[in-house]
Length: 187
Image 1 (cartoon, rainbow, N blue to C red):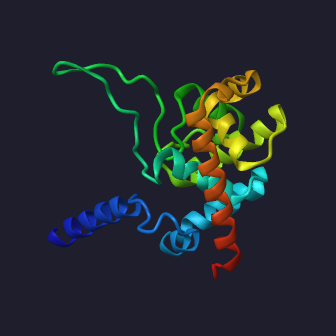
Image 2: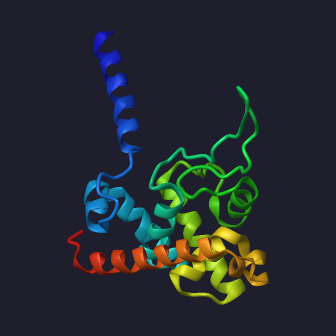
């Protein structure tokens, strides 16, 4: 009985450890060496949606810093927690409605925003749809679509947000660094 309990406990701890963010998030090779299953999932999403791996990973880093259970902060009134301002959750910070669109279009019944494989596939799907709807290809404009939504991007809502343009520029630069790193990886 003690052995069974020990095996179950070790399994739970291993499951928790596998959800930890990578120790070197600025190096794509290091990320994929530490988490080889992430490379397989990212490659699969690339083949399915034709969005470069560095772009998808850069968007994910910007949204969640590779943390699986991130939620927007909860506002407080005195000592009373108030509802969150957004339903964004998980690696991709996908909102409930957009996640449901993905599930209906491409996801599957058991997809989860806190599962890396599903999250990277979602980012690939969303970016592919952004290309199709708004004819954008660069990482910064794919990220602007991701942040503002397809309609918001098309209306140009991002043009009035200097802070968001800076964030999109950082996403683009990270994607370029990741792309250079990926070329030299031994995976």
